[in-house]
Image 1 (cartoon, rainbow, N blue to C red):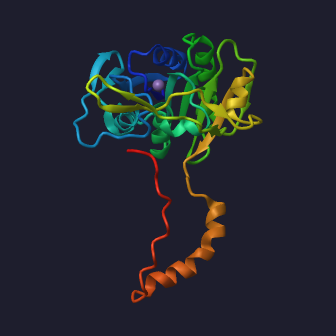
Image 2: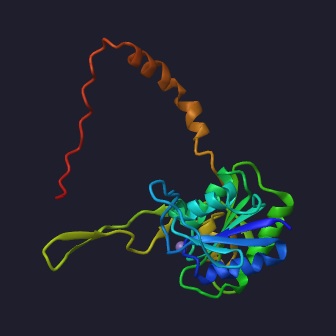
Image 3: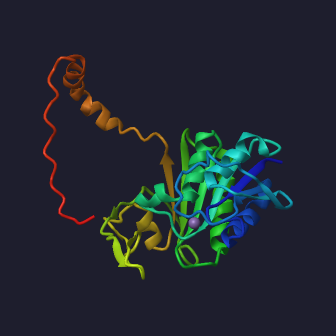
Length: 269
Ligand code: MN
């Protein structure tokens, strides 16, 4: 029976993780390695300066004092009895859509699995909902398909499930957020200024064909994400910068060019 690794960023006790592990049970031997504490918005972080200590919580179920990417590394690089055939991350409590995916520990776990050559899937359920039945069914269907077909090279699937019973499933591209966030400034009782990030409702550009649009319409959004971050179109266009920059770099005797004018900041720091 194939070994399947399940992890998340909400922590080993999260209801979404339990639902995902149960959903995949018919497809293989499910192992859980998940962070002992919530790690939401930790992104792709790895723990390099602390020892990682797995704790056995039950049959094939471990917590780790680390990030989702740590859990994936441990699982793929030798802690499990064999290399997993599939990695499933989630089901996250809250959506992971569009430009927000790089913040997501849930999606980053799937990125890590992909980098290590294991087909990987990330699952998230719309914010503020804790009924994982439909999302678990989606996870089983998508995982089954991925196990049979495999995934394209360097590609993971980012799956977002709407609240309630989905109207269907769409393949989508990442949507783009309109960043209108502000920092919120407060003063604490000792007179020190501090700041809060991540406040305010996100708004989105045109929704057609995007993950946000599909979820907004009540559909499951499946977005294939590619880990080659090179902008190949820009690479083709920008090669004409090379001769000039290359020449300047080689002319060591050339005067250091004047620094470009920097707009003066008026904000108080
Ligand atoms: Mn989370």
